[in-house]
Length: 342
Image (cartoon, rainbow, N blue to C red; front, top):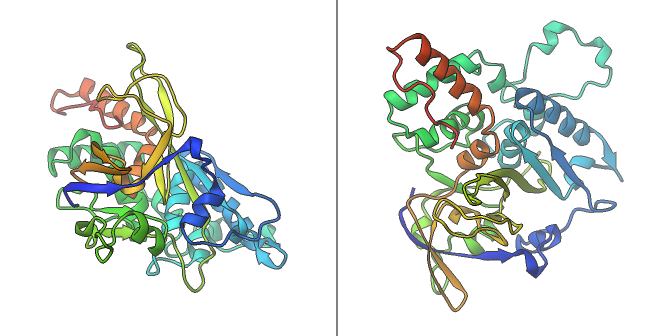
């Protein structure tokens, strides 16, 4: 987690933003897909994760021109429970489970499966965290109280921290500080990292102080299906004359931002939308713009913890309600109904 002023790139939607351009920026060859194919993983909590796992598992099994269909899609769009499955899949490190273990084995004759077999998940499977007894509303609420009262996690980071502990950490995708503040960021690959995140040997150097940070990259290497461009969907509260509508926001391996131009202002009273910024720099304060070089000030970089937590914030209301119930029943439970999702 590096504090300072950094150089970042911007992308305006009016300049012809497209998946093709993102592939070119990443130095990648477009997948040989018959047509421009993307896959969407819907929201819906644990049910969405389970459905998404079956969706990607089937696409990995099916082939188009002799190649797994999953490796030929150009974009993966996720939200909420779909992000619980999709984001770790995109970024699985080499030390994590294999793609087959993460998505689960394909069974051709599903009529032969028994309840006992269905109850056993491969090590590193995406479904393991959500089948844990700890992943229930009441126990998550207790964990939230512990994070706040004992570890000092700020209210606005409690839900994201829970997602990091349960969804990301089992796959080696969480790198927190002592107080569990995210201490990592992400990009697509080594090409995009050098071009837009950190390149200490460039002339002039690009954000050299970020060189020692944990920077997650898309899964790659032997046994890994080629990953598509990630579009993790979340939203941002805006102020429209006292009304608080939500504006759609996308975050991925290259850019993060509100690509549309909604009416209203952010928490700082500033207009939003119309483009995006390099993902690591999203939670930043604008510092300057000199000859097209954007400078931003940050206390920490935008992380996978932020992306997954913000994308799946709806379940946080269930925790907030549980804390409020406990507050009503016992004056000894301090701070029930804390704001853990805003």
